[in-house]
Amino acid sequence: MQTLDLSGERKERDGRLKSLFWPTVENAWDVDYLGQQGFWICLIIAILTSFLLVIVAFAAPSLAERVGILTVTGAFFFVFAVGGMGVRQSSWPAAAVIFVLYAVNQLSSGKVPSIIPLIIGAVLLSNLRATFLASRWEAPAEGEDRPMRFNETFRDKLVDQLPPRLWPVLRIPFFVVAAMLILLLCYVGATKLLRPPSAQPASGAPFAMVAVDAPNSECL
Image 1 (cartoon, rainbow, N blue to C red):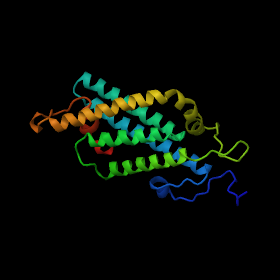
Image 2: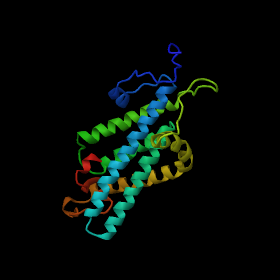
Image 3: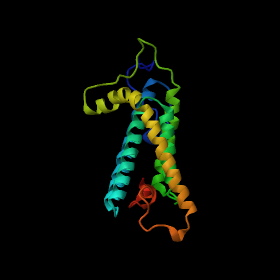
Image 4: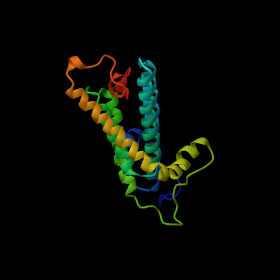
């Protein structure tokens, strides 16, 4: 069984860094492992981004700005969390949308990204590559050994059970909300480029704060 790589356990061919930045897909266990990895990457970014934007919302000077930022925060969390489910289901378009949204968010700030955003961007780009490779992998035929999706712990329910149930339902809303966010960020970036420096507001517009006015926003 071990010789045929049908033992039911994924062989650890790749180290942690290699699996993050240049993973390989050679069997069904690689596909399953990279799907889980991509899911957690997207979920962690969703949580961290939402946390930073909530801080920005509470620092906003007016109620209208707070409501606007919190609305965008919810949209960001929805897109990254549901996109992670798509990645878990080997949807490379979902991984591509996540990467494009993150890249546009960084570019719309008008600043050179620091090392942390560059690393996150590299991880998301690698995640896109891994998901594309996984999507082209032919699933084992019926009766052949394959990784199992468990339903025992909270982690099992989150990683193994929710994606196949929710992704088909939330797939279209995911792409719609993501497209709206990308267009919004493009508008914010274009507005910043065309606006004279002397005309830049001190506090920033509600949506512009998403990309550029958050404390330590370069970590987004």
